[in-house]
Length: 419
Image 1 (cartoon, helix red, strand yellow):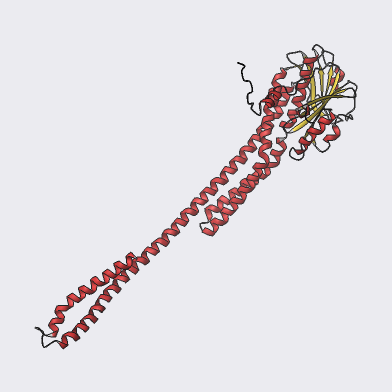
Image 2: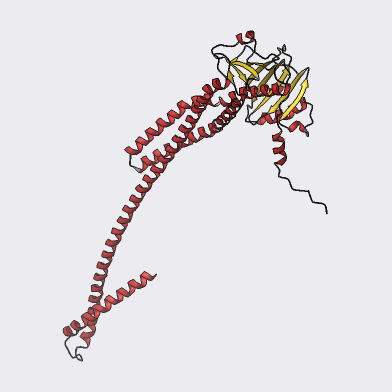
């Protein structure tokens, strides 16, 4: 009996498999000149989705085929082109002859990126020598020159992370002792380092811009807190609570606008640190390594972003605590007012009860008086047959009339209470 192999696959199984093999490293044989441009979305990612299909057409791949993979590889006019789609940006990388100075070659899809935002531009000159020649080093700024051996001495790399006249950050790489696959790995790592460096540092200008706004939030909260201690009226409390809610709304909007960028900054920073560690560098001469140079600059930037996140979180928590404190004060104030009202109602009820008892007593006397008066008229007409005189009979009847009036009114009050 044959086994049934028609398993129901998880909808992400193929995606996971494709991601495992995504973005393979192309072999590179020196000498080569490699350029990479990285573009960010200008409208929240919609233009990247549209660009994906357009680049598939440029690469000559059907829209229902591998064009929907996150990497497209094709060749145009002697250049090998690789287009890659990331979560937040897209990169276009091309390799050409070492004497190719064209910064915007036609036919590789650059014109499709004109509505995007350029965030990174990198140029790597891969040489077939084992060491970097002195003329190549002389073009770098000596104050920021990073010159080191990479991959445990298998190659040399140099850069100063300055933009050249064409707007590219230039790397010189000597990998003459390596094969095409190892050379491709070295170039790939350097391209990733430069791309993730710029993406990791995107949060720093935002953190600096937010510094003044967060300081204003803190000052506003301090003023509101001072007012809370100076005013006790209900109207004042309501005005202060409205101010706190406005401040909370403003801070919440800022947090929503910045939380993604700060989270992405930390994520890119972690990826950058991992890529730098893989270089396995050793400094050459008196120069620094790429890892040491970038860590000295990127790590403080990441710390600044984390500090700004903490300030926003702290001021948000303080505003929330102030709202809760003010709500508690207003609740206690309302409870005090309610207790005063209840005490007044209780006192009024007690007075009404005493008044009612007084009225009932007067009513008993009045009823008894009129009842004895009526009884007196009856006794007057029967005085001839009575055993005692009229005054004596009225005196004997008075307690009975009072008791009858008392119990009658009490019964009426009980009956009214039941209804």
